[in-house]
Length: 236
Image (cartoon, rainbow, N blue to C red):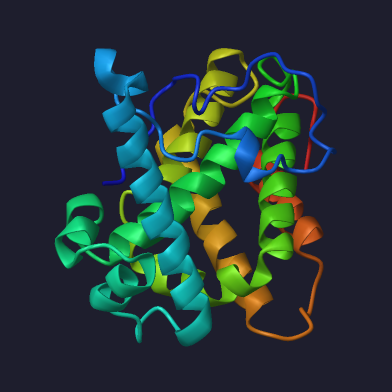
């Protein structure tokens, strides 16, 4: 279900109305389930399909938080959502698809906010710091979700990570602009930054109250990486 991001409007910053310091927009302002390409995307059948998919997703997350991801079955999701069991499998063939969707919706929120932030032509340090601040805010505001779902999703997050691909794309464009050394492998740098993000989140969610400030930790990790890959004018 998870696809490798490309340089499209969903992951590429462009002009917008808000700065990255503003609050993450509520989910109602964002596309909850991206419509497939084609003339039927806006039709009644497609709208109904997306409504059911959203209801299943909301129900699954609710149950995961109530009783845990591992202890929740697809049958329970169907019963709570008041749909047939086959309907659940039509939209989410395997339970971990809900985790993939959870991650994808978080990334969509961050991408939507960056689009409003006039970041398309900003230096890479500004872009990555902004991305990390928004990720930190999402995790702080939805700490219960993070504590329950992030550990369960790690196996899928670290394998062909969409977030690593997003970071690699930003680094590649910075490299094209001469902000990053030419010999740097953007994909390796993106994987390093994504892995550091997930490790930091797990440490942060493991203690109540958290042992460190998440925003400072994440932006600090981005800053260290950027110093290592040699942004001109920013010596470590």
